[in-house]
Image (cartoon, rainbow, N blue to C red; front, side):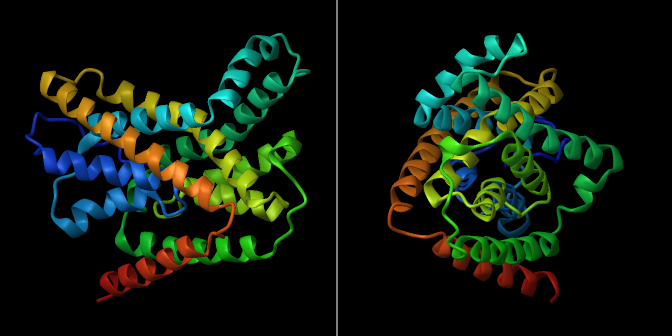
Amino acid sequence: MRYTNLSFQYRGRHMTFTHLLIVALIQGITEFLPISSSGHLILLPNLAGMADQGQVIDVAAHIGTLFAVVIYFWSDVKGAAAGLPRLMTGKADTSGAFLALCLILGTIPVVLFGVFLKLTGLDDAMRGIAVIGWTMLGFGLVLYWADKRRAEIKTDRSWSVKDALIMGVWQAIALIPGTSRSGITITGARHLGYDRESAAKLSMLMSIPTIIASGTLLGLEVASTANAAAARDGAIVAVFSFIAALAALTLMMRLLKSVSFTPYVIYRVILGVILLGIAYT
């Protein structure tokens, strides 16, 4: 997920259908897999020579992936939404209200850290290939370590306020490009003892308020620059990112019944080594 790069605007430049499709597929496929969507989207213009897609397309891609995760976990999302009014009265005594509370608390660290990075200008400073290479490699190995501990003593039903806050801190680290929001929150959940499917589920649910916060911020940035061409391109990206995200999410959740996170770790390590080789040569 892209949390930074707030300096780009949609300037009416023409984007081919192929370019839009590539961006949508990259965003959709990598948003929920633990391989970093932000890292791949930053690498696209750097390595493929394509122009940066800009904020309008970012917002559209976020909308597509948001609908995908909401639909996939509809029963949980519906319960949390229904529990919000109860939570607003200061009570979290229903499952829906408690889930909403945990999701809100888990989002606070990433919002605070995001504001800090924006105000200090560190968000743009960390967008280099070397940074992405190191985070791809390093946090990939951390995911492998956490996943192989096999301390599967918790399920998503045992999620607590304390664990939500801890996972929220892990999630804030994902603001560093190449880390992967889903990857780092899954790492945090596995470290806390959640089984693989529960770790992935909690990570995906935590993405909803985070995507909403990020998308709202980007949306406010581009509200005055959008036009008919931008709306058309955004609609294309939203549709294809939704399809790609839903397919990737469905496949990953099914595979977790029998496959560990090792294949994603291998991919991260290989890509990380390649990027470091490019960065330092």
